[in-house]
Amino acid sequence: MWYYVRTICILVLGFALCVSAEAQQLRIGYVDMKEVLDNAPQVLAGRAKLDQEFRARNDSIEMDEMRADALETRLQQADMSPESRTQIERDLRELRRNVTRRKEDLRDELSFRRTEEVQQLEDQINIAVQEIAQRNGFDLIISSPVIYANPDLDITGLILEQLEVEFAADQLELGTR
Image 1 (cartoon, rainbow, N blue to C red):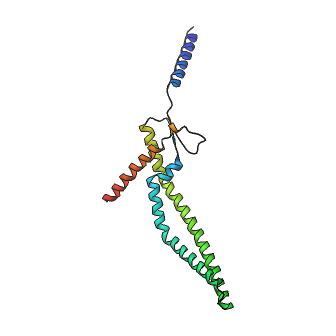
Image 2 (image 1 turned 180 degrees about the vertical axis):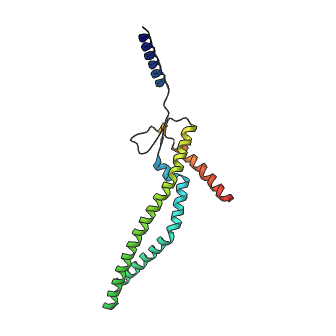
Image 3 (image 1 turned 135 degrees about the horizontal axis):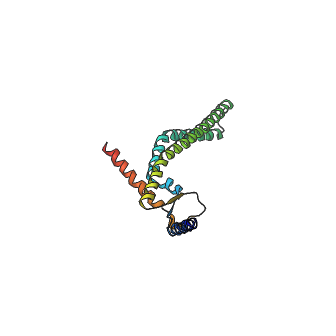
């Protein structure tokens, strides 16, 4: 007899817990990571830093491209000896190869540095997402890419605001040092 009563009580308790779990609302948020990585002030500052870091090399490449264009223009003039023409053609080929190689090197290094900068910011972005989730009572945060997310679930703006506050605080801290 006690066995049946105990089994019935367990079933009723299990049913009550299931109904209670269904009644509890699951709070879900969505973060568009592309938008965060395009607009976070930390990312924008990192881009400006990289631009400054690579500007001299890029300017040097552009100057060499202008020299190559000038050599090409000079070649189109018919007032030079065959030896001069051959030498200018050789110089032009060498300069173009050099420019192409330096562009590829610059592009590879810049890509590597961008990836490095984003990886450094990932932890900061993840912490901001966790803080927003805990502060606002979210049970689950999903980041892009997703197939569909209702715009009402989008908390990207909150994340960007949090990152702006953190960036401003970091800037103040750096300014007081």
